[in-house]
Image 1 (tube, one colour):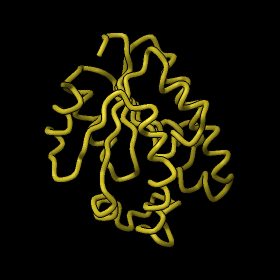
Image 2: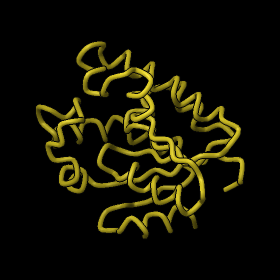
Image 3: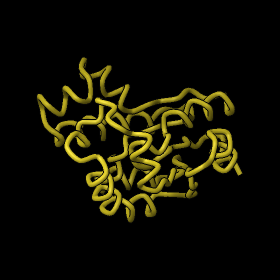
Length: 168
């Protein structure tokens, strides 16, 4: 990874993007940008509230803007987007850009369901977490693969083992 490249972690909700990003930020001495947190800061409300008040399409617009802004920063960061960032073709083009190095944190459904549970802040998973995660993974898997420079399996691995795999 070049010093001027942002390191982005993509993958399903529950794959560990935010946790791994924090450890990578410390290891690489880089600022960590959690896009959902940035979106909440800009909107002045939670992701759940944005979905309820304004809908998923509006959230995706905010997400695209936050991704574009983070990638435009001259200083290289560790960036943790939400799991659905790859749904947009424009976002996938940004993720394939020269200043982006992308690691796909790949987890199986059982791992995702165990980690996500009924956390309360993931509005797309309210009704049927397992079924919804399975459907979303089948829709998104090709897009994660398309943007990934490296694929890291996270099942049964510690955060430090995942970090080491990304940095190899």
